[in-house]
Image 1 (cartoon, one colour):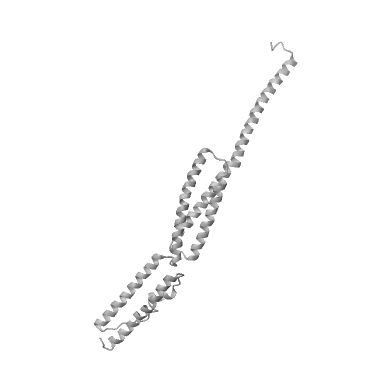
Image 2 (spheres, rainbow, N blue to C red):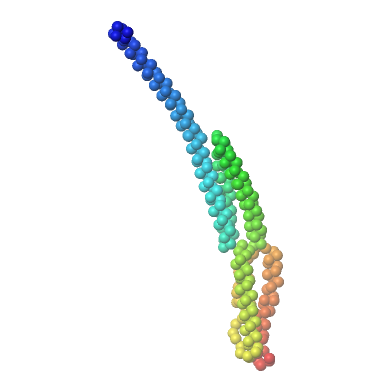
Length: 233
């Protein structure tokens, strides 16, 4: 039948077939473009912003954790502690803001589940952080920022004065005098008291109670030496 058709009819029919094929291809292409456009919009408006805010959250939490870990160093000065507290507070505000922006974006059911788990863990961590800073504030209120070093000093000072007592006993037994240990401002404890400035009334009251006995202790060394040298056993 196609052979008996006129040439014009064949051409028209051929053009119609080509047009139909082109129409189908066009519809498929438009549908594909719409699908791609939807994916591009989702990536640009949801997925990429989600990744950015998650990265911001992670970065802020890492800085927060580093600041908190560093705050446990007893060698820090009060100024360094204050600076780290500022870093911690700023990082905490940043991660909360980033997480809030992330939570406002559309999410899948699995993402919602993971987000809820994250918020629970972070909530527990926040409670532990609050307890940590309460304890740290209590230490700072004593005015003794490095308790370990303070105790080490006290042990050293006590040992120093026991050593003085031993030297005095030796002098009394043998009659051989020794030089020094009669100046209460020259020993380690005396120098430490002169240099120590603690903003703690109770601590300072105890320290002041020790000043006079400490002075008398060292002056007694000079008194005993004089008696020994005079043969007044």
